[in-house]
Every structure is written in C-alpha cells, then in structure tokens.
Length: 428
Ligand code: NAD
Image 1: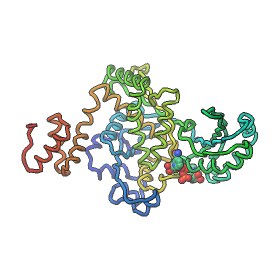
Image 2: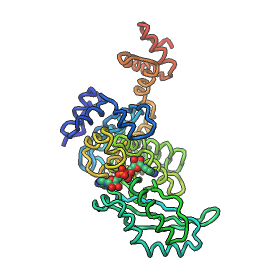
Image 3: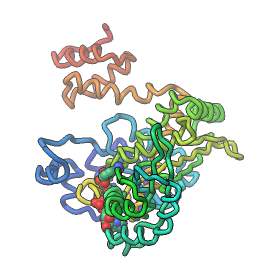
Image 4: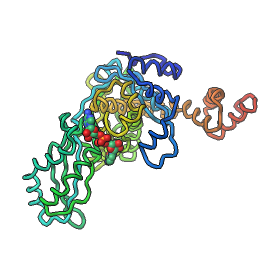
C-alpha cells in the first residue's frame, strides 16, 4: 500500500504527482490521457452525455494527500475550481493521520422512490389495501431490473404515508429499493413508473408523480476522526473550534456557510468520480434541516483525552456504476486512484473529505481567520485574471503578499508594471 503521507507532495511537479498517484493503479490509456488533461473528451462522447453540446469546461483535479480511511491510505481526487480546498483537506488529514485517520460506516445503499396518488376517497383504507398487495407490487418492480436483483438489490419494502395538504389528503407511497453499487435514480424511477396501473387499480386514485427522493435517509454515511490538541493548535484553539461549531449548529445563517465548506470537500470528490453533485447536495441540505432548524452536518466535541473529536453524518447517494461513473474516463481513473471497490467505500471517502474540510475551515476561522491561508492562492487567481503569464505569476504573488494587498486593481497595476519590464515597488 502506497503511503499518502508524502512530505512536500505539493512542491512536486504535476507530472511527478501524477506518476505517484497512478502508479500500479491499472489506468487504461484513455484514463491516463483524459486525467492528465492531454486531451479533452471527444465531442462524440460529450454529445452522448448531455444535449445540444457545443463544448466543454475543464475543471482541475487535485489530489488530497495524508488520508488514512478505515486503516487504508487513500489518495482523494477532488475536482474543484476553488483554490485552497485541496490544500485544506490535506492539512486537516495530516493532523489526524497519527491517530488512525478516519473511520467510516454506512447504514446501507437504500433509496426511496415516491409515488403520489391523488383523488382517493378513502386514503386510510387504500393504505391498508396497498400493504395487502405488497408482495405483488415489489415483485412487479423487481421484474424491471433483473440485474440489480441478481446482485442482491431491488425493491425490498413499501411505506405508505397520508399527507394532509392545503386542499386535500394525498397518499404517498415510498418504494424502498436497495440500489447496491448504483446511485439508483434511473433504476428507482423506472420501478416507480412501472407500478402505476397496479397502484391505481388498488387505490381507485390517480397516480401523478413517480420519482426518487434525494433525501436519502436510508443511505446515511458516517465518518469520525480525532485531531490531537497538540497537532491542531493547542487547547484554546480546539475549544474555540467547538464554540464555532455550536454557532453553526444553532444559527442557520452560520450553518449555511459552515455546511458550504463541508460541501467544498464532498462535491469535489463526487464530481471527480462522475457522480451527481446536485443529488448529494440536495440530500445533505434536506438532512441538515430535518429537525425543522437548519443545522451543522458535523459535530465537534472534546473527548476524554482532551483531544478534538469530529464526526459527520449525511445521506450519500453515490455509485460506482451507472450515470457518468462508467462512461467518463476521469471518473474511472479517480476510482482506481482511490482503490474503490464499492459504492459504500466511496461514500466513506467522500464523508472523510467533508469532515477534513470542515476541520480545516473551523481551525482557520478559530485561529488566524480564513483569508491568511487563502492569500497566495487568491493572489494567483487575481494575477491570472489580470492577464499575467505563467512565468510572471510567482513574482506578482510575492509582491502582493509583501504588500498585504489583494485588491484586484493593485494586482493589475503590478502585472502591468512587470509586463512593461519595470521593477515593482510598493508605491501604491
Ligand atoms: P443507471 O440506470 O445508469 O445504472 C444502474 C443500473 O446498473 C441498475 O439498475 C442495474 O441494472 C445496473 N447494475 C450493474 N451493476 C450493478 C451494481 N453492481 N450495482 C447496482 N446496479 C448495477 O444509473 P442509476 O444509478 O440508476 O442512475 C444514476 C443517474 O440518474 C445519475 O446520472 C443521476 O444524475 C441521474 N438522475 C438523478 C435524479 C435525481 O437525483 N433526482 C433523477 C433522474 C436521474
């Protein structure tokens, strides 16, 4: 097993990093070509993925290092346009590595498909009748996906809710489907659509919507890690982190930003593996609101040893088959780099990335503030925006940091000065 604790990983060239994380991972030639950015996706492949294709947008894939997850060193591919995200995750993972890293578990790979039934005269009696026909309904669903059933998945159970709305009561049936290594939206939607005639005949009502729920509360992933006080800045900082967490847990204005930081880590891995970022994001935010108050997705405590214990729990509907996970060569390369063999394992890695991201953000906010760590990356972005060439960027960033000035107009001025061949001073 390759260690992910590689001092100076960030100082290596992109080629050196690429070789290190892809060595012996069995990447195909296509996966190497597309991950390395040597070629964009073929327009034919792009055109087969979505509609009306005219082009593509390249998002960098970075590797978060220092992750040990359930005892296994794991490189984490992250696709993101936001500076500092990969560095922050790697730094936080480093602080927990010696304590064993991250430990994860999952409640299962079960999704809910919803079937809305209107115009039922006697919803309570209809509910009872649906349960009388449960086996017939499940069997009908399972006939639609013999592959899933052969893998031990498929429709397993039913729930029936009567929802009072403004005008009338409606019946909402939940198909409980184990989608195994697939995210499962297509699989579940197909099943839900196929049982319409049976449901209408049993209830005497009219079926309207048939669609998966992204509030995947039967597919919860959990991760935890311990950050020793010493490695994480001392007793005062970790106490401040707990207070910062409590702020988020009781104030939705703060919770929105706190959870956005968590999603910086989560969505980046979801995207790198070709999964549906919106499905995971919708599930996460709906789950954070389940008590009626929008809360933190993580919990932070000081344990009996005086160290910082972090944990996270959220729905994680991701797959390693289906959707773009199989068709996009970079998604396949990402799974190989992580050495992932199941959707459950992938979900654990994603949760670990979210927890690490939150640890890093809380640490920065509770100590020096978020902007210091962001400074040089932010300056780089501004320099590129100002039209700096690659060879000019380091000088511009160094000057901006000396001046402690990250205003765009000043960076533009520095860039122009350098491009005129003049020497930059701090005559701002
Ligand atoms: P899919 O239909 O492409 O693949 C799933 C199928 O693969 C299963 O039904 C099964 O027959 C087969 N399969 C083969 N090996 C399997 C294994 N080991 N485990 C499980 N199934 C296996 O994809 P999907 O996962 O059903 O749907 C995912 C896609 O649906 C994503 O692209 C997502 O963006 C999209 N989508 C999402 C929503 C939503 O989230 N609300 C709605 C519609 C579509």
